[in-house]
Picture 1 (cartoon, one colour):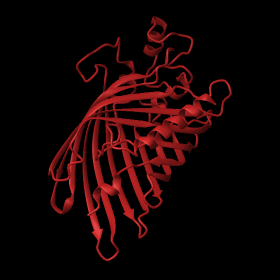
Picture 2: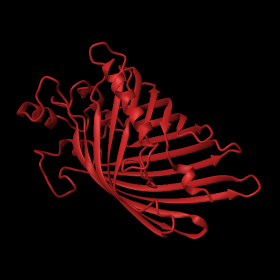
Picture 3: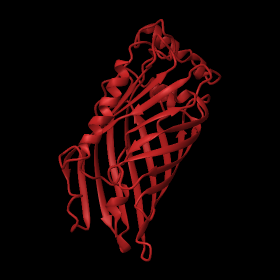
Picture 4: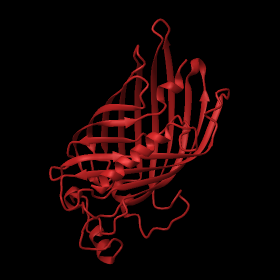
Length: 319
């Protein structure tokens, strides 16, 4: 119950952030949105009640409020949590994860108000657990835990071996992402159609920012693979009464992961935002690996139903 109240409080804070001009709510062309949803199971032995991904940004330096600039940039930090509650009495919330990043984005306005943006981000991703990932009897980092890791081979089924309650997951990661936005105005109807396409390369690594190595090993990186590629397309359609309908398609590929991990993740999402709302309702269909820290070893078809928050998107591209 306390966890549920905490998550709801985080979302209320997120809503309040969107109401005032302060370092927590500056516009960025590429932002992670907060969400709360139900999801079908990714593993036959676990039933998901709901999951939440509250996200908060802090703007260190931001030029995106200056409309007169053809080139804009921003420096920022952001924090994203990922909680998943299961239908279990003893430990309903298992291995909640946390991401913290420092990032920089730069945009160029092109012809017909199209916009090209690229970003660089580096940070840390962890679930903060203390036990061995592959044997719950051992402390993480102990000789016995390392032996359990070394016993893994190409024929191992990691989904069956995974310590789902207390298994530790910890990696550093950096990403570079390119996005191109094409807004179109339908003059007779005074409506906007927005197209976005983005390409991302993400690299998992042991050293923070690829410079500071404070870890004892890189076993997590060796399991999930060092390289991840993602292609994303989104179209945003504004209706006559200024409601929004969006379609989003993400295609993710893991390179160099363990053979038992499905390297592919395909996610299709349809969202509806009522007139001028920042809260939207969405349905998603997912095929491929899970994205809940070490549950990346699970793979299945999944359906999600929920709400997410988008304070900007279309309104930043009115022509």
